[in-house]
Image 1 (spheres, one colour):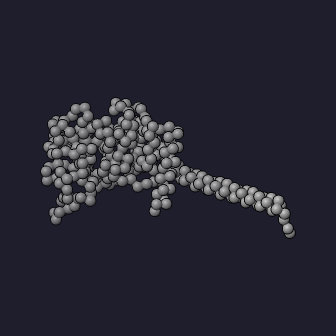
Image 2: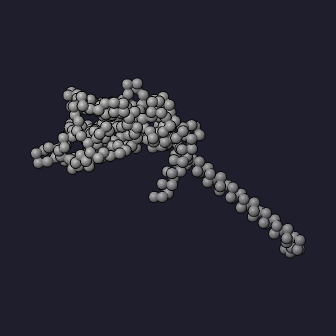
Image 3: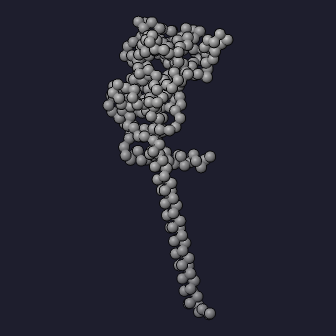
Amino acid sequence: MKFSGDNFISYNEKKKEETKSIAWYLTTHITLYIVLIFFLIFFAWYTYFVVTHRYYIVYGPSMKPILNEQVADNDENSAMDAVYVNLYDKIEVGDIVVINDVSSSGESIIKRVVAESGDYVTIAKSGDNFYLYRIPKSMMSQNSNGEKESLLSDSNAIVLENESSSGYEVIWDESSIYVDGNYTYEYKFYDRFFSDNSLNYDYYTSQDGLKYVCVPDGYSFCLGDNRAVSADSRRYGFISNENMVGNVELIVYDYSFGNRVLEVIKFYYTQVEDFFAR
């Protein structure tokens, strides 16, 4: 078949248009399939996320500054932030957890795990300040007489406060414990663990005479980050691990529906990045 010059040009133009049309068709369909696959993966992940997480709005100032930083210390009813709690992840020392069935009101509380089963904790006084110390169970041993020994001295024990003390005096007499304003809950600690003879806790007395109480099996010692206004293990005692809903995996600052969705999407992208970074 022969083509004249005009027919040949028309034929080439037609083929170009057909090629463009096919390329556009493939591009749009591939893009749509990719988007569809992405949303299917996201939907599956979100379904899994909803099943394995629980959403809580956080009230009060007990976890400042990490939660509700703008809430006043005397305001127990305001909420600015919210959290997603992982119901199945292992809870470890340092995790923020939501706890049920502890407060007299029956409401859930949110605190940080600062000591686990087998750890020893105490509160020591330095000047007008109190410092909470922890000796991990890995640092405890027994001597040849079967007595407990610590591989850490009091001065080297882990300080569970934002600042460390440069020294302290040991005070066990309730009448001599400094009790005023912010230190009420430190008094509760002594009152609960060292004044009630009916409590059958295990204790350890260091060489310096500082008395530690052991966290029992199946329990944890939990504190709020804002120690001065937090009702926690100093008041309620050891927290049963069975009452812990789970650990906080995602914080929604200035919670609203939009921020809630945004934080979940950001968390999803972080999970995807971590997966492909392996």
